[in-house]
Amino acid sequence: FVHLPLLLNPDKSKLSKRQGDVDVESFLKKGYLKETIINFIALLGWHPNNDQEIFDINFLIKNFSINKIQKSGAIFDNKKLNWMNSMYIKKLNIKEFILLFSETYPSYKLDFSNGDKLSKIFEFIKNRIKALDEVPNLLNPFYSTFILKDSEVLSYIKTEEARLVLQYWYESISSSQNIDEPYINKLIQATEDKFNLKGKKIFYPLRGTLYGSFNGPDLFTIISILGISETKKRLELYI
Image (cartoon, rainbow, N blue to C red; front, side):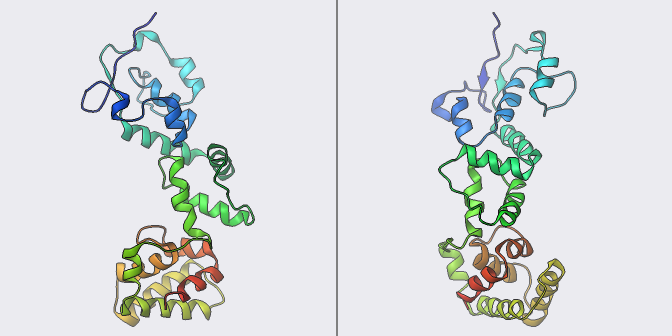
């Protein structure tokens, strides 16, 4: 038999259920990939000859050695687990990512009616999350059933300054035939020049209206995913 190192919290206290999830099933439900968990657990008290931290099961089978298991306690570092899981998620192609989310959370019904839109959304989400349970909050704002509820955003976009920006963008987008990234960048510059505004005074009302939050994707990403019709519809609600 083999004694494995004691698992410790970052403060060196003994890892226990009272201080959070410690069982594999809990992490799987939160959207941590199986590959991540195997990789992470393997490094609790053991390390390969090199500094490699991301590796698959085949590498582990080939390189694992009982002789290299350390005697001292191993720190269960949630920050490292989150980083590692984000790395595994980024390695997925979009079809794999969508399928994995669907299988992990079957009760969440994805809208497959527009496959191109869904792929764009998951491409955006893939680089922003640490675990799959973060997907719904980033995905929901892109659909027409989304309702703006953030009181701070609602208060901000009702100001006269914000309304001017929203009105200008609604009129500009309505009269344009080609909404691409260069056009959006030019429109941002034109807004700065016309109203003598910069930074968040432009981005906050637009992102808040279109995405429901001050923080989120860049404006071109939001508009390209929503589409012109939905973009105009959301702007029109608050001008």
